[in-house]
Length: 436
Image 1 (cartoon, rainbow, N blue to C red):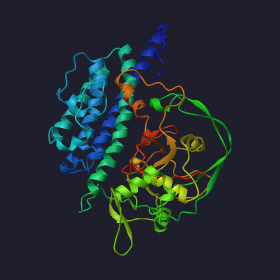
Image 2: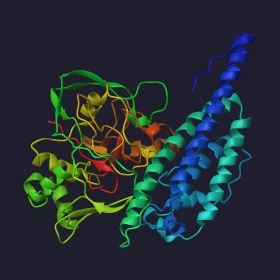
Image 3: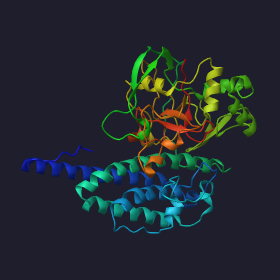
């Protein structure tokens, strides 16, 4: 958004009004693009796929479609348009996620128990909210627009997070089906030969991290602050399935000395012996479920769907460690944001195509676990009101992941982005980059 400065001459008034119209049109265009992309992600699904909840951390696709509309309705339309009337008042209860200041909500683990509202009714709800927001952008005053525009921007980034969640969640839903259904057909990827892992040297020194530019960023990426780092090295690519298979074949899941205590408890409690979605056939080969079908594990591809505990154990077994999030950001600072994102439609991490002086696969393959607890930056202050619950209240018992995955929208990736999940989580596209 352009900074609002009071015009002082007729020409400045005209230029100001033109800029305001451009801001409105630009935001409206982005709104339409993001909302359309969400529904395009759902096109390969059958109607039955929309309603299943395969575990407590997974939400039905239908719920994602409704919740992202509820966000715009609750924080934009009801706040800025006194004439707005919800299509159904009960949706406040059904589609609130975790905003306690907004009111009570339906239990997250039981979202899959509801057969109504129907998928058709949810799409009608989305269309209703879309039309209301477009009307709002057409008539709202300049002062009101400048207030709601940042919240709309937040809502669009929130919806992009749910675009990724729709795909990670439907992958889990399809994975429990013994018929091995596919979300979509795979795109061909040319043959590659991944070179041995290399290391990038990073010098000790005082660095700045955090988001300090114009444009959107989540509150947890701010403020910019200085950190001191000792010398370290970071791997020039992600850990591959072949390297992880070596870890498995040498008893990686059988040696408690390389595991954190909580991680070893997870291994014992849940019988982990491989990444999520992997299973071994009688002939000894390992197969995995992907969004594009059930197939052999490919050794050159980045390993994915591992927990923080597994990533940390692999690093210890390798004689290395996981990078801290500030090390990751400093190392990635001069690299371009590139990779196979959602728009590439691979829906699975692909192998590194080359080995050169760059740090490869920083974005667009798998989120990379770091050794950092998810905590506030120095000077962090959550926004007032319910939107302050978006990030800040989760700063406990979570680990930070950096980068972006193969199902992250390209425009959603940022150097300073701080993703976070509990250390036991495996259903996200999470992988490993080593440091030492």
